[in-house]
Length: 116
Image (cartoon, rainbow, N blue to C red; front, top):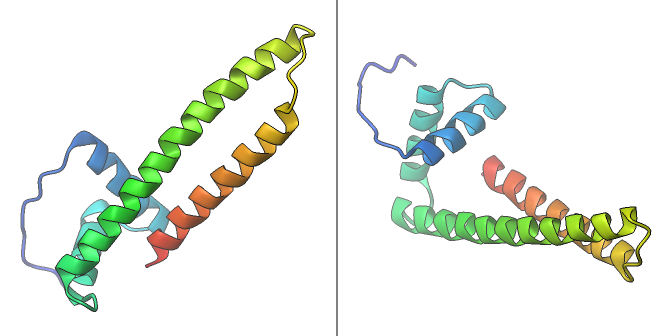
């Protein structure tokens, strides 16, 4: 299919970075990825607005989870600093295990969203 219609799209720097990364992961050029995504949203069951709002909510939840994991990572760095100075940090192993599990769930959810 030859796409011969051109439209301009405005994105924030962060949005563009996300789109570029997703396009690269899908093996597409950025413009082709944007076009494919727009067409997919337009064809979505339940209407494109419902699909877009659903996806936006999921993305916001993942971003929130990612921020919480970043805070947990900072706390784990503090624990590592204590352990490296021969200090004691009870429950450190359990905390690391929980953070790693949570990170895996967030990553799996992001991959699942990207596949839709």
